[in-house]
Length: 143
Image 1: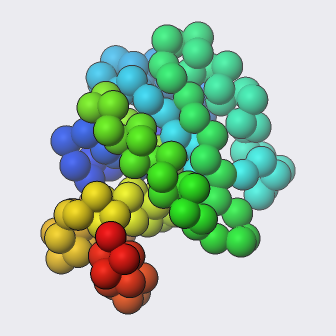
Image 2: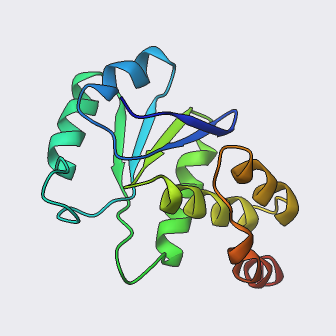
């Protein structure tokens, strides 16, 4: 069972979810699942299609926003920000939760949240985003 790590009251991240985690996600009040992991990173991971079907079976909205070797694109941030704007509780996952926490942080910075707060919130659940401060600052300057 994967841990659900709450970064903000509306947004949590997790390492790789299993099909069985979808019922728990629903029971804990999540309404949107974001997959930030591309298919095929490891042979043992469930595919996006399998996870989407499992989420759908629980009545959860599922969105694939895979972040691969090319890194996080502006479209990934924009899509995440759009889902956050729904106001629905979101659970995002990838292999370790790190990519999901970074995409979430970039979306928050783009939305105008203070960088120090964004870094602190992710750090409180075990994700050190201080190495991304420069990217956050560039994004904040462009916002």
